[in-house]
Length: 247
Image (cartoon, rainbow, N blue to C red; front, side):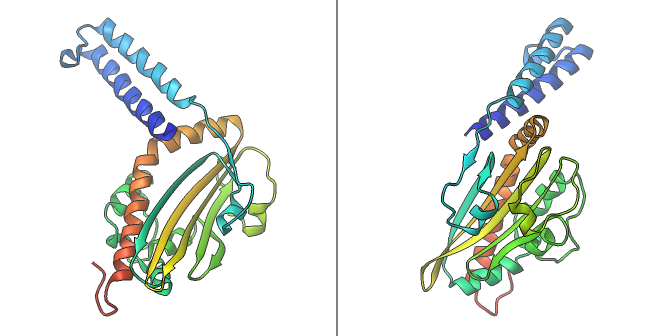
């Protein structure tokens, strides 16, 4: 809830600041800004609101008793999102679909990732989404076919080399950003599974924390939509007849 509230403040603040700047050139009367002086006030209020959005409190969550492989690699985090979907297929088909589903099967995936990466392509055309993630940006931290796969990346705020599994578990000083994501398959019965995905982020260092908080609050709506559509694409592929082409 804080993430959505913070994101709304940041977007409204940017809109207000932009309206204020525009009104310094020509007052936007349709917005009630009738003078340049009011435009300057609106600009100032926009900057103030943006600062409020940046400095909203961030809470830390700790996992006391690890229950999943994700818990092993991300027992402490400040940012997270969770999505789930029920799939009418056995776990082996769900696992195969998870590894095979491609961007073109996932609604809005290409558009939203293009916006998020400022036009940079994540992987060659036709690659499965999971393979594109682990081709360079993320590493596989844990893998139990039919149950759970965990991928992640970590380093200082400027990037750096990708860490292997043991390095993820070790202590690292600030500045630090650690991102861990999983897909987990839980059998409901022989023909149904609950497929979930969770992303957790841990940051260390005051400037890194505030910077990532701002970034996370602004990209969260698109990130959430990508993951929801990703799960839906996996569900459609897993439930499709074996000889059917993916929709």
